[in-house]
Length: 227
Image 1 (spheres, rainbow, N blue to C red):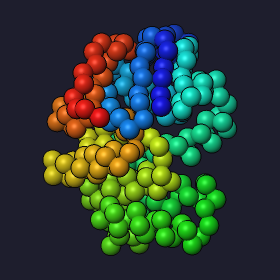
Image 2 (spheres, helix red, strand yellow):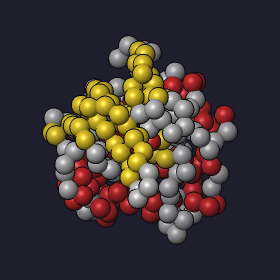
Image 3 (spheres, helix red, strand yellow):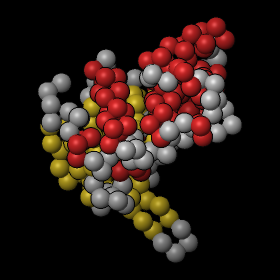
Image 4 (spheres, rainbow, N blue to C red):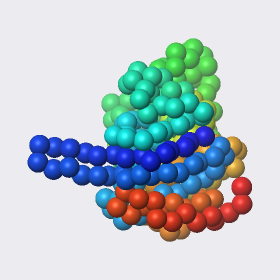
């Protein structure tokens, strides 16, 4: 599904040049659950943003589903992203002015799904995430665990092939974190490819493979489970 070749990302200001990724080569297969680990500042989130088509690399190749995409325009990246990728963030990234239902519905509006179909799919997703009873509430009325369940519902509502999760349990207590990891594991078992950035060894143990980054390099890859 994802293949990178000599991927480099350099951030430049007038005075400073920082290499966030340095010749990263990796392959992520359809149906895998991959964890990316490493110390703060090693390039984990930068790599996730590039894989998620939120940013372009400075050099190198990025292949997604057989297409070479690193030079795609913003519009091309947006179209590919909204049809194929769901995102789950540490800070939830819900819109405070929208209800739970409206937050989850948003990706379907971008895809121009009909009103009746949107209602059916949102209600189904909320039931699945055990958050349907909060459909009319706003994000600030929810606990952290509830907000993350809403974020996962939003991520899966368009049936993406890939979910990218950036520290999905980082703002949660252990019980809610375990619940979120159970949901991600279940989605993967149903066929969704998951790439997760995490500092948590226990969360990483849920994956099939752990990729360790250090100073923008891939330093190790460890298989955890058989696909």
